[in-house]
Length: 84
Image (cartoon, rainbow, N blue to C red; front, top):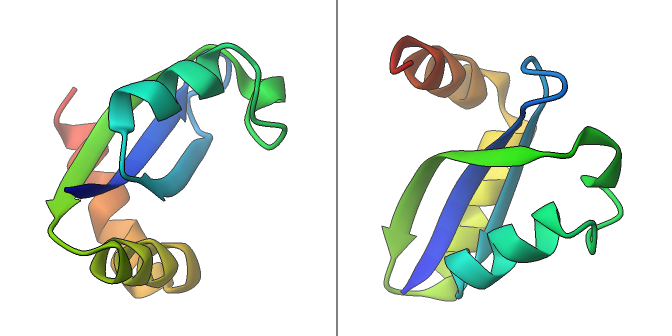
């Protein structure tokens, strides 16, 4: 499985990071250890959403769609925030 995931900063709860990975647990650990430059200033982070895909291509396409299309990100963000 390959995962599309969304992390939220606990330091700045309005900030979200979107990514994809074949190993979700390892990748979240890398983020929270400060090993990912783009998320280091926003530590600590928490996983707030993920989707599982059979192919890496599908997960990367979903990541790209969410990152580049506000019509996709805005409703997903609202769904995430309502879940708290």
